[in-house]
Image (cartoon, rainbow, N blue to C red; front, side, top):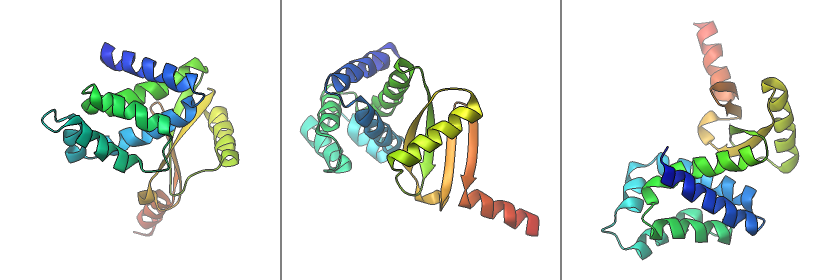
Length: 175
């Protein structure tokens, strides 16, 4: 990871923290980072300096929609204006890591079909903490491909309780 990515992530963490929105901004940026990472066209558009910054920011605002925190929108617009669109996913990953580390936690990437409420997140944190022996910060990604259930990854460890995987295992047993 480049020093610039770490510096940008630290700066964003300070700004979001000063506004009392660090957790929300980290979650939103992480989800945005996954979206950018999964689309070559989007990543190229956000990092293409021949496209005016205002147009790239417009693409980003459309992606974030009205549900995103204004702080997230402003911080990501700043990154695009600084020609860091190509680093967006890396900066988001590092921001989440730094925020969790500051709280003495490890990051768990959790994929679900629907968003989790606070009580569900808390139960999941507790279960993953027990399973890993670490304090866990959960980052939830909505992923319709898993069909149902949850897939959680903490470092190199994957806990797969998805309907898709269960169906595949049943299919193997029946074959």
